[in-house]
Length: 168
Image (cartoon, rainbow, N blue to C red; front, top):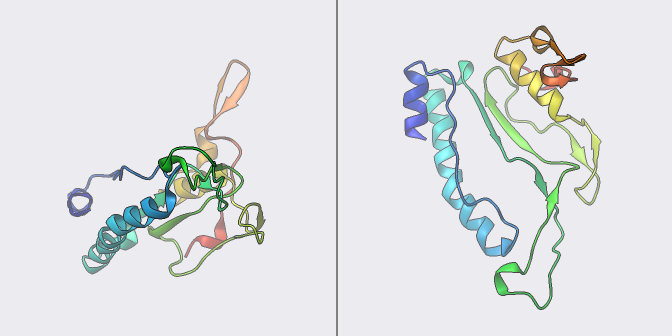
């Protein structure tokens, strides 16, 4: 995380930090707390460091996975111990968080049903998230449309609306 801050401070426009070990298909009850413990303090330190140095307003920090996980256990009886307490991919809803970069701080946007499965409030499609991130980076996603083989293409496919409610 310190290297990410140093690169940002030096003017590097895009920095990606990947933390391995988040594929918690099995044994989530012991694996997830360890993964969180190894990531929470460094990420909090990065945000505090960026803020202390006056870089957070102009730096967008996005924390995300590629999908959600179901909250229920599949509990595959009779399988190996590592495959117990399995949670499956959850494509209907997932969460991520944003810091800095002109986004509103300290609030949650959207909600799921009581099972944590279906979005019921403040639904943000992936295309909307992409459009919003591009907007905050000063890029109008609709201006990037190109036509190929009789179809329009852009970074947000041909969809995406900027989610104004999360912009400061």
